[in-house]
Length: 313
Image (cartoon, rainbow, N blue to C red):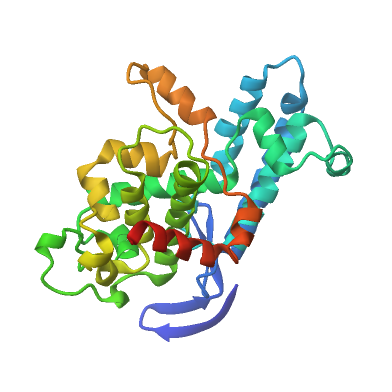
């Protein structure tokens, strides 16, 4: 909606509250609430069109899952990889996707409470990723492409603080100034990296589940070193000569893709085929740290601090 305009030679410059570009709503306050609501509304409209297919018992479970992944998820998660999101925003995505799970299971919201089918149980029944995992994978793919392939002065690099961003510690000549980052986006990516670090720590250190990752603590240190930027990562006594997250992207792309992008911590058969690998990624997801463990440490921030104390000392 236009609320002001300035007359200039040849026309007017309009100042607006919001506008739509490439199907996304952008607002003057740079908040994502309108766009997320827009995504959810379009998702639910499309879900209504596919509800008979999703409820049909004549279609296989894998086929109905494919309808959600191919026809519905792209609408809901469109452009989320470049958004500044909070945990409250992600809950809106989770709520929308839960509607699709209820439709596929042919139950109502009331039935869900009667039969004690929470979101985690429904996701487990259909071997589907939660919305947070979908967003994390898309975002990590996005920033990996930026770091590896984008020219240093490209527009998308502004999210990552280009052109002053330096990740090779042996080439560091000037400090990385915090004002060269997009602080909101950096905080969002830090949230995703912390989530993956918590999952890996839970798998390898708390559950002591089998894994053939050589040094899980090295990856956890790299992921938890994101928010502190270069001033944090360049301190040898804390980093313990471990690579930074950007160095992992550049120097260990296979490890980065397996552990950070897809969260595949379990031992992997070295002889698995490409098709087996794709199936594993589609149907296997890292375990979320239980709420009682997080609360037992005094909350999420305190739990992350305890992980830092463990892996950095």
